Amino acid sequence: MATRREVERRRNALIQDLREAVRSGSLQPGETLPPMKELAKKYNISVNVTHRAMQTLVEEGLLCTVSRVGTFVRRRPVPLEGFYLWIVQEDMPLAAQHGFEMRMAQLGATTLALRPGQIRELFHQGQLPSILGVFGDISSPENREIFSYFDQEALPNVTFASSSSGSLGDVVAFDEFEGGRMAANHLIRLGHRQIAFLGAHTSAKLHPGFEWSVLREEGWREALESSGLSPQGLAFHPSKVPTWTGEAMFHIGVELGEALLRRMGEITAIVAANDRIALGVISVLRNSGLPTVRWPAMVGFDNTAIGGAHFLTTLYLPWEQLGREAADLLWERQHGQVKRAPLVRRVPMYLLPRLTSQYGWAARGVFEVIEPQNILQPARAG
Image 1 (cartoon, rainbow, N blue to C red):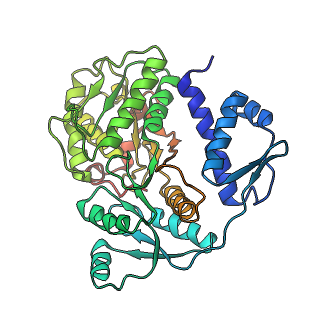
Image 2 (tube, rainbow, N blue to C red):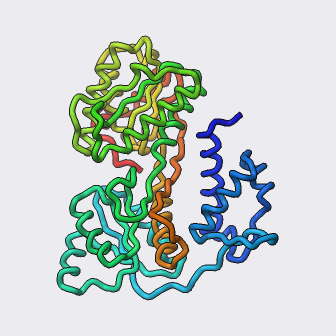
Image 3 (cartoon, helix red, strand yellow):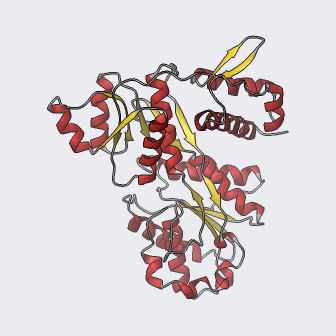
């Protein structure tokens, strides 16, 4: 029998697949959906669970149900005049903005991308154009101030965050928990049983700005426990709260890699909270003299290139898809298709199996073509 988490995962997969089919045009406005029994069989869930999944999309305004007739894709409203505002932030990949703007263009809407300082200046001068909705990252105080302007006007707003904490409206986020679970399950399927987690957060209870790392650890922990494996003593954390920079993440990997060396005969694989932490571990291993056949298998997050090469098994974060989700949620909220309390929509990550999750991967000569300085200075995540 499937666990509650597994049923929830299948239900979410059905919701996500139908949502994407509607938005991509695979399911056209007015088109009838397959019968619930057929969908239930396809996703290996009960008809009741299928009904609840469909009801979620009805409440979001994507579908409508006619008693004794069926469920249909709801017809889209005519676009309103005005702009959907994207708050530009340096550390958010450009792919997210592209996804947002392209999706809005498909919907017939107009976008405007401005930096926080530009928005503040135009707002106080009373020259900001008519805004229909706002999207941005709420993690910075500067952006929270910007969001407060529009919240006073009751404008739809969507924020990017690992959790809904501190958000004034709807949230789009990557499914960090499921990503951690996928990473650990991948290593379990390859035969690993002692799998460590290397976090970017400390072991303290408060993790402002590092909720993503906490959720990835929770997913890793759930995967181990569901497979009858104990995570006890296998979670490693930095000694102090780091800054969120690539260099800081690398040095966390160095710190935790040195701690791992003392248990290398026991631990055969690691899930690192991001690729840069994994690279810090690789740097330690490279300088330790430990035979490469004893290096642990590794899975990270972010799809970071090293010396122009991709050899780390990683969880890819589809930023363009996240931008599309933000656009859809703003559109639906503005047009009254979503009326319930603020939503959190989670975008799935994608596992990219590569060299480092295999046994003995480091003994295969990959470092012979990668300069040592490229381990210390990896390229920007893609």
